[in-house]
Length: 137
Image (tube, rainbow, N blue to C red; front, side, top):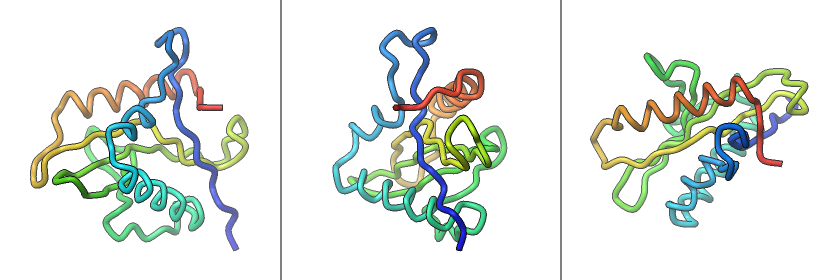
């Protein structure tokens, strides 16, 4: 049986954000408890599979184009689609092993594209993660 992956939440570095915010947790604060539980259940299932062998079923998908390198958790509720952006870090000794790092999230109306500014924010947060590699302790 494969070893489960760890789940970490990217935390901004004090040099970039004195408040050291955690963008994904800030996003979760905008969702209902039911939706947060659904996102967490998907993350747990992916971590347990682990990611390379997880069959997404529409709830875990690799992103493409400008968002290549991200994976997203997809849930629906409260009349919207919600996305949580993650990166995979295989054999990350600084994280204690292979890990899913939860970066950021967004909500959008059903059947509509995400706003470019939302993708730019997620890309900026991933770039910060790649430079600083700080996670919520």
